[in-house]
Length: 105
Image 1 (spheres, helix red, strand yellow):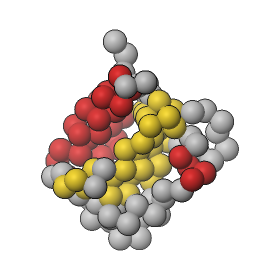
Image 2 (tube, one colour; image 1 turned 90 degrees about the horizontal axis):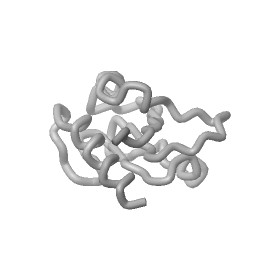
Image 3 (cartoon, one colour; image 1 turned 135 degrees about the horizontal axis):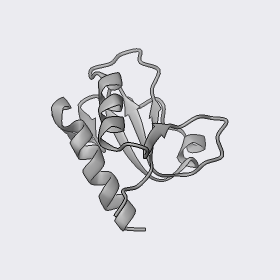
């Protein structure tokens, strides 16, 4: 089974507690051809969206953004969906959660 298409939206980066760029690159490496950036001008709806916030505020979250994917995972610093996760496990956690979310469709 091919996994879900994962769209990522970065926060503004004003107070990063994690290396968002490294996390995104690792997601792309582990999900080749299935991971990309969510862009405002795109009409594409992703299977799973990831708000990749550097801190717990998750300022990139908005109602308009939520229309760009069917399901969402929120990374805010060292938290994934408001649960603490070691930075080294964030990519693994995103991939596991995205598979679970896409199975529940």
